[in-house]
Length: 233
Image (cartoon, rainbow, N blue to C red; front, side, top):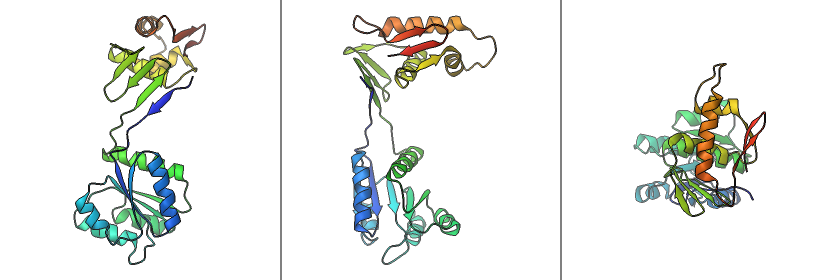
């Protein structure tokens, strides 16, 4: 059984300005698939009005538009006080073009042809930086559910109370299902100590306490791997 991770993007609205219908539809498809609300425009004609009426979190802007270069439009928006993050997506790919895009107020620049996966990663990164993306991830595995937004842990439909250290370790294990986690690595990550004299007893005690809270009659999640460390499965 694999781990399931979910996130909530449906409250985030993204504006796409692209004069080629097929590219616009491709971008809209991939963004919508990720759960974003997407509004597309083939020109800048009604974009400013839309920004005034709505509250989008991001603009993806082509530069080769019918009536104006997209960079000029962004420059105008910045002068008027619009601070919405902008990703330029353009066939203009020289160093000067890219530099110009940033100078007029762009926050990122992707050249065409582009990889939709890279675009999604850049979108997510920029939304994180701007604070628009309040990540509300849930990790679900077997009878476990971790809600990262509230730091709550539910096992077999019962809430489990964990200390901060236990929660952080548990989440780390959940992100590394079936991987052998070295004791030295655990100590370095969670005790922030890279000294030669590692306190393995501290690790053993913490793992034992965590196991008592999360293991049940159906599952024993954390297993000791002799001579190596631990594995969560």
